[in-house]
Length: 207
Image 1 (cartoon, rainbow, N blue to C red):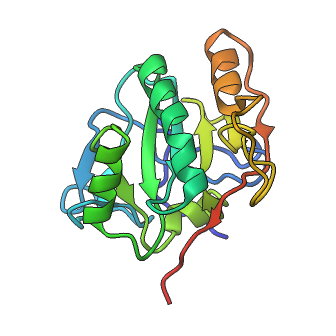
Image 2: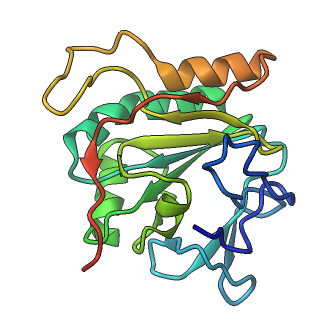
């Protein structure tokens, strides 16, 4: 897949080698949190919940970003919400969590209710044509991709090990993979590009 030309990380292009050969450049940086299409056209498919195309940028000073791919209906995705909410709260402002809803059939109204039900930040984005999901090789919800400010992969995969497979859940997780990777990075450990298999619901694609 050829990466979109305007995906950038804090103003610099992420190398494929830096992301272990399968994460193309991602737009993360530089100043404002959101620009509309009329100001800066984007070509990778994210839209605000009001339907306008956007180019997302991380807040200044952000050291890492977690793209969290979520679903309104997926029970595995919903079970991960409390942990994602805690991490987003505890690791701010060094780590910015970006909620992306890639299912084609999920409406803005349903996503607004979902954010409110789980007491998550109201800001979220849709990826209705799965352009960002495909660029990051994300196939299920929930799944997270966490790059650093200089384009190194911290982590990609599941949030925790509560589900070993579909229908194979534990009462509670025994490992918190995303949290461990982020905390190691913030404590000074060089990112190792940790990968785990994500277990969840397949993304609903438009016909």
